[in-house]
Image (cartoon, rainbow, N blue to C red; front, side, top):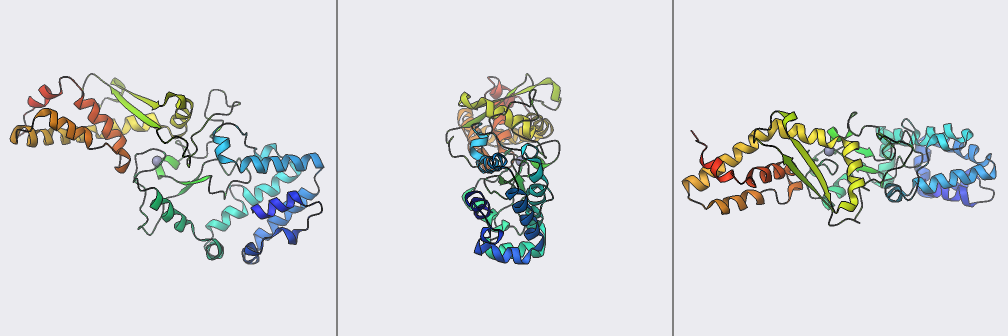
Length: 340
Ligand SMILES: [Zn+2]
C-alpha cells in the first residue's frame, strides 16, 4: 500500500498498473474486490484539484506517523476531513468494513497475504518473543496468550479504523490487547486523541504503545483506606500516579481510555480478601511456626511482585501488599490473627 500511494502522489501522470508493486500483484489477482476498491481510490484521486491532492497527501503522511500523533506533534486526519469526492472510496478500502480489513479476516484471502507477507499469528509470536511479560500491555491485569497457544489475542486499532484513513493495516497502529481492554465501555472504538474528554476539540497526548522513549517510566498505585477490608468499594480510594510526573497528561488519557481506575478498584474490592489470606497464611508459616523475623518476612512479601507485569494482576497485588505491609500496625495485626 505504501508503494501504491507513494507513486500515486509522486508521479505527474500516474497509471493504475504502475502503482501495484510486483509483490502485491498476487494478492490483487486473488482479491478482486481489493483491485476494484484500489481503482476507485485511484480514479477519485486523479480527478481532484491540486490543492485537494495536497490535502490527501498530507493526511496520508500524518496518519502514517502514529508515534508523532501520540506525541501530539501531528494531527491525524479523519475521513470526514478529506475532500468529499474521495471519502467513500477510501472508506471502502481502509474503513471498518473496508476491503483491506475484510481481506485480513476472510480465510481464503488471508491465506493469499500470509503466503506473501507472513501471518498475524506469526507477528503475535514475534511480539511475545520480544515481550516476555505475561500481561496485557494496556491494563497490566489480564494474561495474554503465549506464543505456544494455537490462538492469539485480538489486535486493537489504536487509532480507530472507523475514523482515520490509511492506518487500518499499519502495524505501528496495531497491538495485541486483552478482551476486557478492547470491549465497548473500556477502549472499544473510542476516538482516543479526542474523546472521551471535557473538550474533545483539543488533541491529547497519548502513550505510543511501541515507544522506547520512556525506559524509566513507572506507574505508582496507592490504596488509601483505614481498614484492610476493601470489599466496600466506596470507603477507600486508589491513587494512580506516574513517574516522572512530566508524563501525567499521558497517564490521565490512559486512565480515561481504558477505564483503568474503575477496573482496578473493582478487582481489588473483589479479590483482595484472597490476597490478604495469602499474607496471613505466609506469616503464620514463616513467623509463627518458623520464627522468621518480621522484617525479613516483610521484605519477602514486598519482593513477591517486584516485577509485577510478570503476574496476572501483579500490579494490583503489589500495591495491596504495600498497603498491608507498610501499615505501622501490620506486625501487631498479623500477630493477633488466630489461624484455625
Ligand atoms: Zn488489558
